[in-house]
Image 1 (cartoon, rainbow, N blue to C red):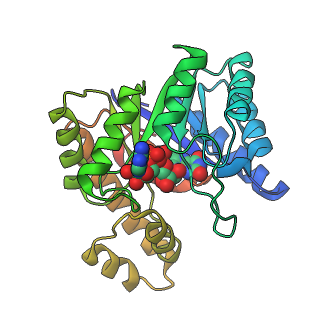
Image 2 (image 1 turned 90 degrees about the vertical axis):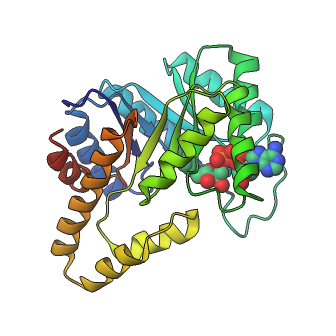
Image 3 (image 1 turned 90 degrees about the horizontal axis):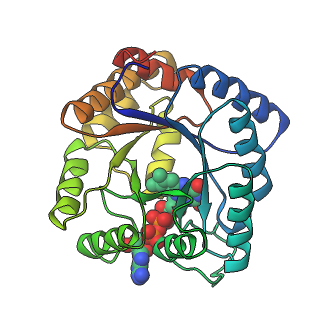
Length: 279
Ligand code: FAD
């Protein structure tokens, strides 16, 4: 690493043995560059509880400061506290606190903690300042938000409940990020808001994710990606150039770091880092 800003990495718990081997290889290659911390996702409703715990332990065994994600929707307070007790006992000091989305078909499980601000409050209530808490931010507005201003109010609510920092949903519109940061600062809040960076390696997969999470692929970018058709090698080259250019602009204009959605794939993140002179 040679950037002064922090770089963090996100992984997800693998479902099968071959995926576990892929994750472990990717993690070893990426953590060799000494990121500030790594995070591990958690399936809402506890669907990856064991897998997240195993992956967190693996990341700790590599010597990484590891931040488990924890989503509250569909869970009881006791269950959340029990998970956090376990993390405290194993030396975890950073949590990414989320509401989560229950998979469709599971219905509306009320649970006891409905929004991420309530989870942040629960963590502070039970654990004081033991954990550094990151929350999610949406420069292009969360898809279920009633309005941009309500979404901003809800974000501020998470900070007031005790969040120390935020990681954004990925985006391809740099202006949206700086507009969001400015609006947050305009409300007197000055926590680090780190852009989430999604490497581009596969147009169809990207389009599917973006549709689900409300990240806009600008028309011109979509047209360029579609043009590559089955020429995946050229698409990956173009994607790495584009994402590295965007990341550099974010850093040059003051972003406090970059959080990479690795998708458990070292190559795509390394291709961006090489262009940023990180690797
Ligand atoms: P919240 O901050 O609770 O907001 C959710 C929605 O409700 C927003 O529209 C908000 O405006 C609104 N809202 C908030 N508070 C209130 C209120 N009091 N009244 C009415 N409306 C309100 N999902 C997972 O399942 N597992 C993961 O590991 C995971 N990791 C993620 C990591 C990052 C960095 C990001 C950006 C997202 C991640 N997600 C993950 C996805 C996330 O769970 C979804 O985007 C989810 O829909 C919202 O979670 P949140 O924590 O942002 O929710």
